[in-house]
Image 1: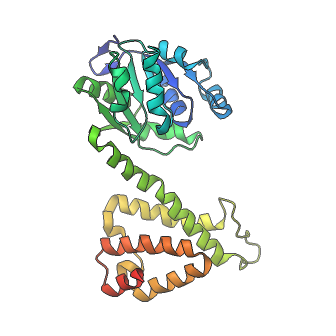
Image 2: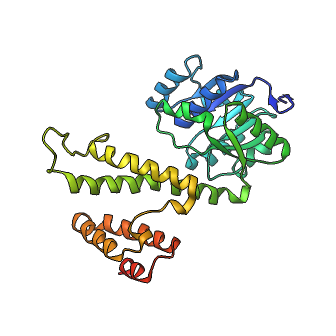
Image 3: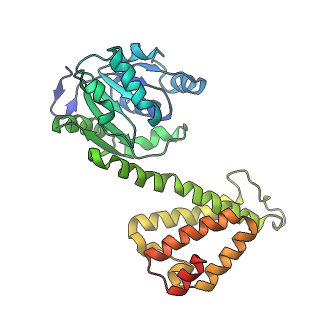
Length: 303
């Protein structure tokens, strides 16, 4: 059984399954506070390269070896693979009793770890509320990230809280029965904002392409172009204003009750891409409902 000094964990031997974007970042964060990643699994070429780059002293080993040598076992596989991995580890008795078993899934609580809990492991769900792209920024962002934690009891919560605080994160409790709603909220913000901004960039490129000023960069589909430079400051300001001021940050035609402008937007977008126009309509209708927009605005959006 791993011993703890108050809320500060002893230095732990960490095993990571697998060395993907999340697993690698978590491994580096733990090593920076003196835990030791003794082994990791990596199947794909990208995972192996990531492990070689960021976990340079960590051997890549088969899953049973990673599990058997760990005091803290981090399961950083995709959500769809987690239950099967846990079942396999339990069936082969690969994890020693007393091992702290952590998964990084957002949608799952500790229920998915039940087969290992039955073998006297300590189950923890520790989910970083952050998007991971595989870039170096993943590691630098992690210390300032909030982590949703779920445990079986107060001892488990103390361990999870301590691990998160050690790496500079901010832990918060997510009840087992609220994990799906919690994950839906993060997906709505972290995933759908990408779609909204990508759609806006498409529309902006369509509006500007072929009308560049003399000597100006051409409007192209490649990222980091003029369209991104135009929308970047606006989108960042809108996000920061929303986080600081809530719904009061909203500006634009719907906030002003300008039904004619909204109708014009829909017509212009329809001429470029009907699906883009429909996406605008859905988001605009939700915006109008939130701000209790005038009836004529709602009528335009309901057509």
